[in-house]
Length: 236
Image 1 (cartoon, helix red, strand yellow):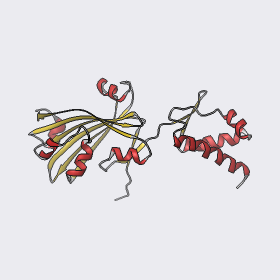
Image 2 (tube, one colour):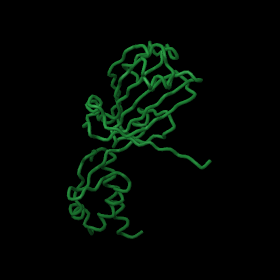
Image 3 (cartoon, one colour):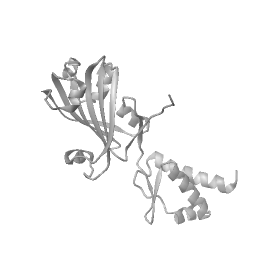
């Protein structure tokens, strides 16, 4: 290993360590290349190589004329799994918080396409909550639980436990359907996520059934820079 290679790796490790420790948080502008050149007493090409590697790893973003900034870490989830949002956030070393925004029991309404797809026709528990990562709104959740299928949900305390976590612990499911789309959030949703209505968001809608009986429908809205969906597959 050459001295230049060793040095550019050390520079990258130093910067990566500051990012991962939180010393340099998302949005922080790291020192300019000429500043790092002076700090490490090396050629600018060495610093440039280190910063390029950090950008390729998704830790920093280079902006023309503005500098290089720490990017906000993204959360990844397999498309065909039922996600554990809290678990996905905490596994990546980020702090998680849950906020209950309200709930009401109501009758199924005619013309409710989402619930018609679920096949729910009796009493429904309508819930709203928000998931937060590192103090920043991460997802707005709108969920409906079919009380005909899951009557015990009426006695659950969703002010302290997210409905998705409660359902995973108490209700088995046998079939699920995802629908994924890119959207601009409605004004009320944008406010809850701290976004503009022009911001690109990821909307994931999911229906789950147990032996053909509808259990729950949920719509998660994520800021577009916060969440990715990944699926592994093979031919045939």
